[in-house]
Length: 447
Image 1 (cartoon, rainbow, N blue to C red):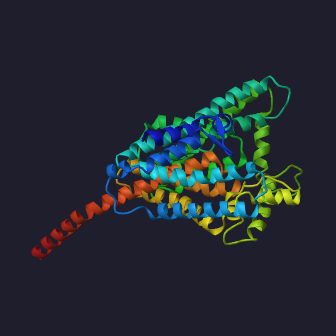
Image 2: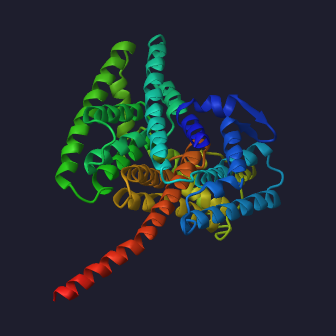
Image 3: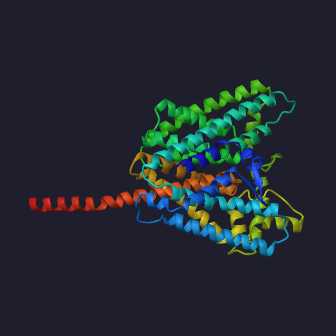
């Protein structure tokens, strides 16, 4: 478990720029600390000792097996097409995209193979929760540092705050809040009440200080899913918990906005409001809308995909098209479309299985788990599945290093734990059948 803990924590908490762009070795494509750890984990995962130590299971999870196979197949097709049809595009446009794609199947494989015992569910959960809470905490600390720096400048914007928080927090900070909401609603407790609400506030405020509109929207959707849909009963408690959590989060966020404005002497609340308003449709507004940077490039990528709907056009096709036509843009900010463009239907099917499996298996574990640690990991996986679906529509996410690694590790863990739960259920089945037959005989004798 040390490898899983190390890679998950580093990926969630440490600054992205330092990990990905500074401490790296360039071998045609930059290889950084996270890449090295992922490929080291894959090397460890193929060793036979993991199979000899593993808890006996009756199958490999179908979503894991098919998803991994399709992603590997789609990756090979994308690489082959890239070098066949666009051999002249610079290597800097091709290899980083391939590297980012490979991170999902690599982390999926390694996490699945290296979780070997049902009792490790507790460790997996605490790794996920502490890393997520650490990510949100780092976002708050970074916001404080950047606020002090902005206070000494003459500008009126907070764009540097957005970039700094994104560098540290990524997407992982939302998970601790979703887990706590699920815990409070379901009654599956792992923290005392006050501490649970405190960690919820830290998670929500940390994500508030990542002033990225796509993140805000996905955080809201994921929180609603964890509070209202993940646990099927306790409707009254759902509303009470949601109202209490909303009060805590809104109060804390409002106080922090006041602190930032007092510290900087600038209209932080107005800047936040303007970004929120850009999410609303308004044809008369002169300000840019949130989707103005997404739709044009998504349309181009969709048109490129139509050139080969079955297998896509290969990695780097967007850059090749930009070089040929002289047009550019923010490509890959709608990952569902860019996956179709680069790897076609096999790539799309692979990600649907991994992300959809993360959601479906997570829900099943959360509701029908053998113990509370399985349920809490299931809640985290289901929440990440929901977030990944929406991130795939709105912004650069699981086609970039940090979210890709989180997706692979989370899916590998939840698929493996579901295998363990299935094996436990299968082992218990003969005993249940014997008990049922005994009760039937007793009833027949009584009659």
